[in-house]
Image (cartoon, rainbow, N blue to C red; front, side, top):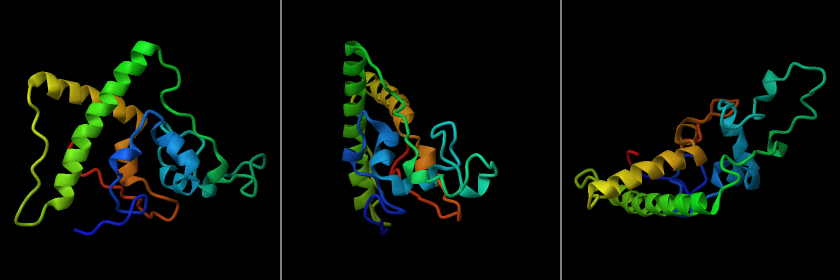
Length: 161
């Protein structure tokens, strides 16, 4: 299977992509990708296709999707919450790295062997981490997000979450 280099279309986000800042902050630093998230107003308010602009107050000449600031999903954390979320992020990254490597190395004759949890507690810790990471990174939007021309971003999340 052939993938493009991240962050291009049909690419796999590297483990280093995931951090406490989330996708919104990444998009603020990489604004050309904001156009793929116009159909996700709950996660990214203010991003919409220029064809949807019908108000004389907001003209298409003044609206530039790349200039729309996006707020991170997690802003203020107590010290305890920050530590807890850091641990969950670390758990997610450990499993993601393992599974991503397994997915990339797989062949039609050798399917990927994904991470095996050593205990029920570790599995539950991972499931909690996925819940938290979903707040920061809406995987559905990353995989299925389309721009105004119906071009799909198609970032590949290489294993079941």
